[in-house]
Length: 428
Image (cartoon, rainbow, N blue to C red; front, side):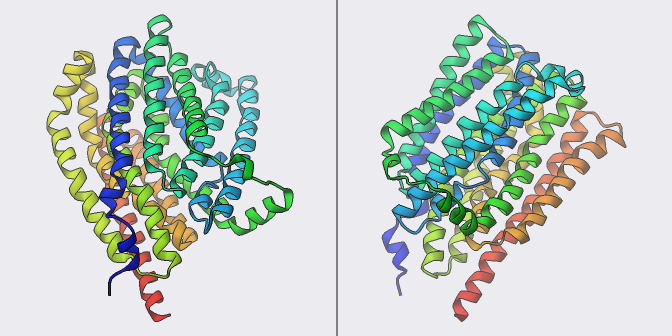
């Protein structure tokens, strides 16, 4: 018997193509920004920017309490609009609260230990606010299946960041210029979506009673997903913060540039597929249809799509960095080779991180995130550095290898959850 969902929807590759096409253009712009940055800013200025970005990404994952996930899980338009409103409210309130530590820390002894962070620390809450709004609006566009518009918003943001990074870098080539370029790019992204996304602000009716119902209904997302997102983001971004404490700023710049050059195109592709994968799996789940085969098929396609990129990147990395960024940045290409296996499997795993939201298995998966944080960060970074007096190469080899093993177990666990769901659904 033909699956009605498959009749209604195109294949995941075709459906995600409009989003990926626009994302690919945005990626090209982002690549140009990355390649121009070393010509305008020194490694000593680029390194602290990546530390700011790492701290900002960790906090952005927390301030919204993962409430945007509720938008895609909505069963109808009225609920989706309501969830969008509460998601915007929660993200805004907690972003404002970030100002409290941002104002207190400069007055404490920590300011001496992290003196080089003090100049841009007040900008962290602004980054959180704009990032949380972008996330909520993007999830609503996902619910509305406006994938092309999501891709266009990436183009607007990255083009704005490019123009501002170059312009500000020409006149004031310091860390704060790069940070302001990113924040203003996010704000322009929000304005673009508001103007062209058809966001139904007038239909939002927020109330204290409605907020209580929202919190009660989505409490697992707000609590467990937030904990998991925090652990995931800390695991992903704490390495660059630790590298800034263990090594000098130029090394952080080399790591940050190489990581973004390789991870950004793969990450955008993974997120493009994830948008469609999330919505399709929700449709399967809401109609009590099995979807293990669909998930497994998506995994195989992701592996086939990223393998050629990984092979080419491994062969060309040092030479490419030397040609496009100059001889001083050839070390970034060597670093890229060391962390490339981890980047590849991370990109493959991106679409499958939504499965525990759908199956509501957050309590089980949270232990994988916690173990991943301990193993990948503390054993992968601190152990080789402290006990073996490891240089940065040994540290990165440990970190990458342990990360690959972690993601293999992680993907296996998520697919196992889907398989168990299929078996239970068949019994019912």
